[in-house]
Length: 107
Length: 116
Image (tube, rainbow over all chains, first blue to last red; front, side):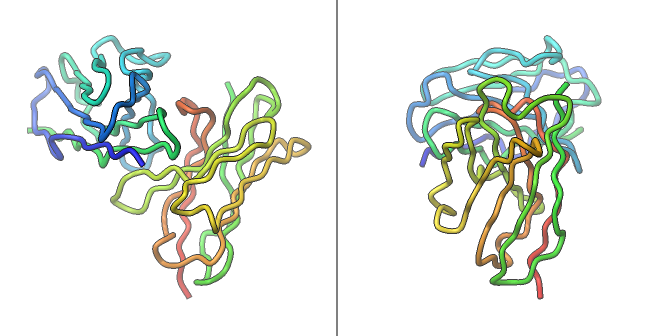
């Protein structure tokens, strides 16, 4: 199974700052990588699919990049509602797997 | 907009079978070519993909759970279901149903506790 390792585990930033979250795969997943945002008590929300495509309704401040084993989710200027847990997920090999998450907290 | 809603017992005894249903509304489970999935999340932990079923009825299960999992479709009721046998406390989690390999549509989740 492909293991996804996210870093950092926790990221403390202030509104208006730029956030950079990383996801590394144990083997190549090509560009079959997605990013989700999850807030307490809610289901995950799809942000980015196939490494760099924004899902419907996702603001332009969210962007994704990478291929192979190294991926990045960037939030260009943090809004108060962006503080949440973020997960990456691969769909290159079954079983599909998620990273352990990065908690983005207010500094 | 298609919506998903999980339902089923919130408490299951150890060694018994967990059974959940996901009802699809505002759309047909047979329309389009989608995978319908079950994903779970223990409290305070990450997400685990349990398995998926295609509109044709073919299934894929996570090898870590394969011997205990059955996912089925019921187009007449616009539902798909999860059965997980021989449950233990480790199966306590929020269970989500979702549509697609890149789930854009999720149910709200249902908490299942395994306890005597």
